[in-house]
Image (cartoon, rainbow, N blue to C red; front, side, top):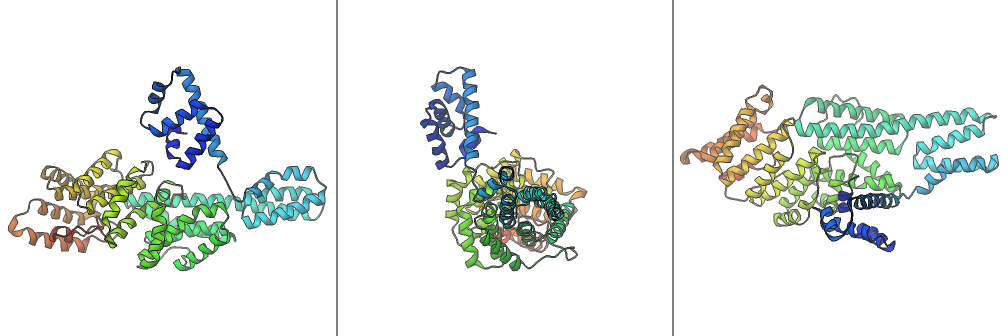
Amino acid sequence: MDLYKIINQLTEEEFQEIYTTFTANKADKSAAFLKIIRDHPESPDKQFLDEFDISPSAFYVLKSRLNQKVEAFLLNRVGDSDLHVMRRVLNVNDLVFNNPREISVAALRKLEKELVKFDFPFGLMIVYKELQNLHAFDENHTYYKSRYNQQVAYAVAMDKAVDLVVQFFRAFDSFYLARKDKDHAEMIRTMEKIDNLNNLYDSHRLYMFKTVIHIFAKLFVEIPPTIRCEVENLETMFDKAFEILEEYKDDAFYLNINILFNFLRFTYYEQNGTLDKSKIYFEILDYKIEELLTRYHYHVNTSLFLFAKLRYHHRTDSIDHLIRDVDNYISQMEMEPYRLSFFVNYHLFMAYAYFADQNYKKASRILYNLRNDVNLRKHVHIELEVKFFLALNYVKMEDFDLANQLILSLQRQLRKNTMAKYEHAKVLLKILSVALGGKPRTKTKNLRANIEKWKELNVGRYALLDSIDIADLFLSEETPIVTI
């Protein structure tokens, strides 16, 4: 594990708790090193060695022990309101060996009822195996053997459902970045598979896995009419999902995915224009934006909330509030490039925020750094989005050299045979070229003609910069409107 990164990701409460533990146990050097890591994340080793006279080998041992202590601390913080059920499952062998048969059977039957409600096949496998063995010499042996086999199959189905959720959102991320038909087809196939799996079992957990995929797809993916599965009405899926969340509100699994369904519900209300309801969910999510962007939610692309935040601040005419949010804490978040769609969306969001504030220099710097930090060449659509947005900022800055250099690069890229689906992008190049250096007498006329053509062509799956009102940007003196 990355010790330094973990310590800096701890909340202040968590940090103080572990720091107090070290000082209480008189582990003064460990406590001091912990604080130095927190206060000096750039060079903690050097800072510690400057303050303490310690040999390299002793320092290595100290870091190793600190690593172990932090791991133990994190493990001890793992909590679960259903932990008592798990503990009983782990104690089944002790129960069977140390009690008369009838007592063991009665206790196992009681535990079976709890586990059925908990929807925990791995625990039920253990219980049914012991009941099968306890009934080895009577007619119930076959029954419990059958129940055991059913739970084995169900456990495999549950494991497969998790794989399908991850598979769907891997395909979505790939599609989002490159807009390839094969990724879209993969998402549709996964929808069909999760639907078939859900139909095999009466399981609220499997239904929730299906619902996550199906609701997200209806909100963010074009679903063809030929899809070979039941796509329920959105309201119906939401109603069932929130009933399950309420019924099992103490279940750790549902507690942790509750924020995910808030995100989906918010998106649904926003897309339908139910702004009074969407505002309620927006405030919940905006308060937890770091959790939404940096925590594990079965790989659902929650980074899309960033663009909803942009829309909200434009709609409420609160760009100044947006900039404060970006400057004060959003820009301080640590986004890892391993999840490319999140990394790109995070930086695009900040660039859009500064662009809306007419701070084109800052927006262009973010986009320039983004292109240097990650390689977007394999992800054609998002590469074009970033390059065009950067070129747009250069044009607004009237930086003729950088703007022309990028426009020429885009012209060469769009001439390739593989770019046939982006013919509309050539119209945007004309708009940028005219805005940058068109003849004064015909400039406005040419801009208006090309912008009208752009509005007509820039639609569908391959649309670019559809969040920006190009007409307002170049044909009026008002603040540019971002309508993501």
